[in-house]
Amino acid sequence: MSATALPTLTTKELSTDQEVRWCPGCGDYSILAQMEKALTTVGLPREKMAFVSGIGCSSRFPYYMNTYGFHTIHGRAPTFATGLRLANPELQVWVVTGDGDGLSIGGNHLLHVLRRNVDLKVLLFNNEIYGLTKGQYSPTSRVGTKTKTSPTGSVESPLRPLTFAIAAEATFVARTIDVDVQHLVAMLQRAAAHKGVAFLEIYQNCKIFNDGVFEYATDKSMKADHVLYLEHGKPLIFGKDRNKGIRLNGLTPEVVEIGKDCGIDDLLIHDEKADEPTHAMLLSRMMNPDFPEVVGVLRAVQKPTYDEQMDKLVAEAVGKKGPGTIEDLFKAEDVWTVE
Image (tube, rainbow, N blue to C red; front, top):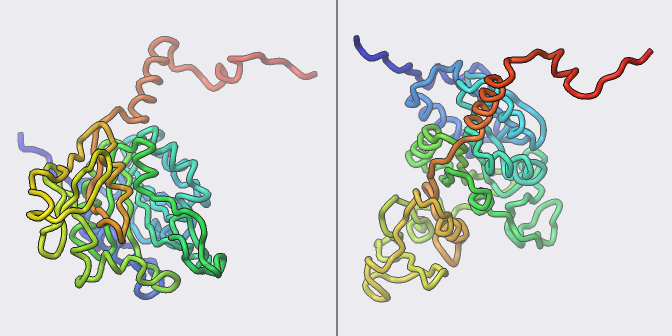
C-alpha cells in the first residue's frame, strides 16, 4: 500500500478576495505573504487551520487568510483560541496579536496560555506603538519615545516580549523580522511544527507612527553588527567580519572580540533544547546598543500540552462515571424547586 500524500496548498489558495487594508509600506504585508508561503509546507488542508485575533492592525489577519478565522475582542484572542483548540483538537490554531493587544489589555490572557502550554501558535507583531488608534505609546515602547500620549517621551520601562514568554515557561520562543523574508518563513515553519505553545515575536515596522525603530536590525550597512542569528549547538558569533562574540562572565553576558579577548571555544554555545531557561532568559535581555539583539529560536523544548492533559482527565472521568448528561450536571449539586 502506498503512503497517503500530504495535502498541498498554493499561496493563491490561501489568499482571500478581501482587500488588504494596511498602510503602504506596513510590515504586515510581508508577514502575510510569508505566512502564506510557510503554510504551503505544513501538510494540512485549509479546513484544519484557524486564525484568531483581537483588536489592532495585526488583527485584520483572519480576513486575509482563506482558512477559518475569528476576529474577537481586545486582548482576548488567547482565550477564544484556547477554547477552540480544546473543542477541536484537529485544528492548527494561530493567534495573531500586537504588542498593545497582547501585552497590555491581553497580557493576563497571554500569560496563562504560555504557562499552560496550550498547543497554539502565537504571533506577536511588535512595532512598539499603538498603530490602529493612531500612535500612542505601547507596553514595548522604549524610554523616551515621543507620542501623542507621551509628548515629552515615555518614562515607562518597556516590557520585553521574549523575556515575558520565557518567564512564563513557554516551550517554544523565537524572534524574527518582517523584512527578513527567508528567516521569517523558517520561523513560521518551526512554530507550526512545534507541539505545544509556540511564541514568535516579529519585529514589524509601522511606517506611519514609528518608522525606522528597528533600522539597526534591518539596514544592511549596520545589521551585521547589531543582530545575532542563533543556531543550535553553535557559538554566539556576530559582526560584519564575524569577529565578535558573546562570552559569559559568571552569569553576565559580555561582547568580546574573537582572537583578541578570547578564542571561539570561550564563547557561549547556544542550546535551544535546554530545559533550564536561564541562558534563553539572558539572550532575551540583550538589547541594542549595548548588545546585538538575537533572532532565531531561543527555546524549543517538549512538555505535556494543556489540551492533552485535559483530554486525559476527561477520558478518566468518563471511564469512572460514564459520559453523563447535561441534566445530571445541573443536578450534581444542591437543587431546589421554587413554587
